[in-house]
Length: 275
Image 1 (cartoon, rainbow, N blue to C red):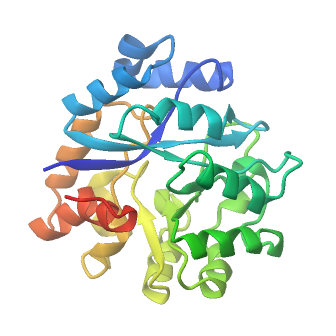
Image 2 (tube, rainbow, N blue to C red):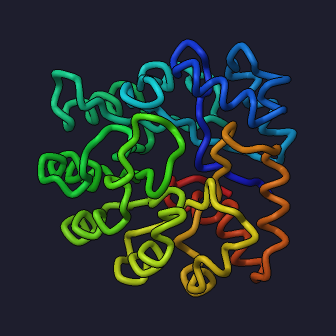
């Protein structure tokens, strides 16, 4: 099985704040041993291969108030020579360029394949109409957008912006926009996230950062909506290697088809990848 990891951070001390890197080093022994000075693309590809991961989504991040800035340019360059690494952009709320112009530049000039936004890290409400032209562009280009939902331990975040219900307006206004609720609203809003995927066919849940063994309890409708769940590790902010997370998914009481959909099938469909 060729697993696709839909949630990987570029944990490089040149871009993220010292306290964030310190957290990764303390929390993840594998990261500390292999990548303490910051990973290079070849090392990440090689590591992912040892974990059973064939492709990894690498995430840009514009969060100067909380974690730091990993720019679109950095992520595009990091992924440029390795088809195993898929670049996802973000947008800067501090930039002079409009959100649409930033998105267009990231897609048309840098080859980005999707976007991730962090409302609680960037201090904005995702249902603010100021973002609607940006969402309209993504919808027209058939590009997925991920949102951090739920809790965060990092200083500078504002959790009220991470409520999945704020995305109800977005999903309704843009019914053909692929929306991924990363972390499934952990831990306060699992029920809301589960309800949203039943209401909106364009909404999905990324399981990164969720205790895998509890997925059946958090999302009792998972098997019914198996085509809406995506595996992600949130590496390196995890205390174990990725293959351990994959093993936990494989041990869940679901059909083989459901587990395959979570681990790679849904990602392949959303990104237009061949199996």
